Image 1 (cartoon, helix red, strand yellow):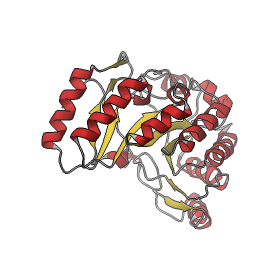
Image 2 (spheres, rainbow, N blue to C red; image 1 turned 30 degrees about the vertical axis):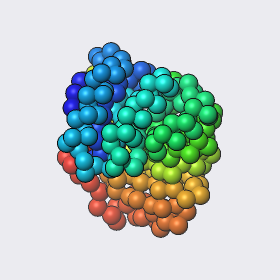
Image 3 (cartoon, rainbow, N blue to C red; image 1 turned 90 degrees about the vertical axis):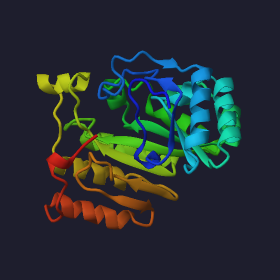
Length: 289
C-alpha cells in the first residue's frame, strides 16, 4: 500500500483495510489539531489508488471493511469517490462497509441525492468531528462551521442512510465556559441523534495554536475531575433514540460505554462517584492520543 504523510483512523477501524485517498486535511485550521500541520492537502491520483485497491484484493482478503484515509475524504469530488467505491465493490467483494472522515464543509458540498448515491455504492459510515455545540467555542478553535450547520449537515447524512459517528472534545472550552460547552454539545448531539458518539479528552499538542495559548496563560487546561464533571453535564443533556455514547479513548480518564437511553442514569451515577474520588482513574502516564 502507498502511504504518504500522516495516517489517522478511528479506533473502531483498527482491523479495516486503510486505503489512503487524500493527503492531509482540506480545512487544517483547527487550533487544537496538529495531525496534518505542514502537509499540503491533495487528492491522490486514480492510478495510485487503483494500485492500492489491487494490492488489497491480493493481500487483504480477510478484512471486511475499508476505511478511506485522509482528514476528510468525503471532500473528494463525487465522480471520483463513486469510482473508488465501485472499484472496491468490484475487486473486494468481501467488503461489507466503507467508512471515511467527514466534516461540515465536505458534507455541505454533497447533495442529499449524492450522499444517497454514495450510500448505495457502499459508503456505510462517516466519522464527523463536532468537537463542541457551542458557537463561541467553535469560532475560537477555528472549526469552520457553527452548530446550526453541524446539525443540518449531520441530519442530511443520516437522511441519506449513512451512519454517523460524532466526536466531541472535553476540555475544549477551558474552565469558564465548560458547562456551557457541555450543555450545548449535548443539545446538538440530541438534534442530530447519531448512531455513535465518541467523547475524547483534550490533550494539548506542542506546535498548535491552542498549546501556545496555554503556555501564554490565556487558555486553562481543566483537570481530571473537571473533565469528568463536564462529561456528566454533556451526557445529561444528550438524548439519543438508540445510540452508543462512549468515552473509552486512550485520552479519557474514565472509560465509559453507554447505550442510550438504557444506560444513561447508571453512567451518570458512575461519573458522580468518579468525581467524588470513589472510582480509580486512568493515570496521566497511560493517557494517549
